[in-house]
Length: 117
Image 1: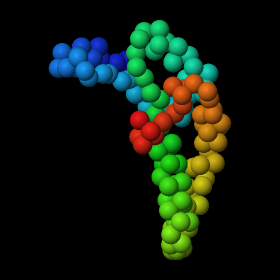
Image 2 (image 1 turned 135 degrees about the horizontal axis):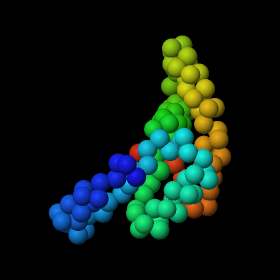
Image 3 (image 1 turned 60 degrees about the vertical axis):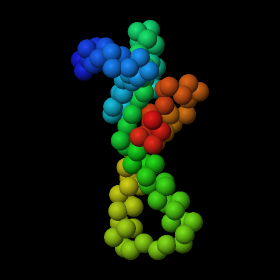
């Protein structure tokens, strides 16, 4: 792993034994489920705590939250909001494979957003 800093991990433990390190695998939406499984196996074997992350998942969560709040409050959106939502729908359509791959029994293989970390 090119960007894993074992010196940083050691320093964190020197500061406090209660602190833990977490290797955050960013842009995980580019990984297939099989690739995430392989990385998870490697991290477990090396005793590395890890999480898969994607900002795209974050965007999808925000879209769903906004849609839920709109439907609950009955707030109307402008035409510009509708056009922006259409673009967001295209982004969501592009990530259906990720959503399908995210339906796994092992929670450590899911791609998380910042609200889920």
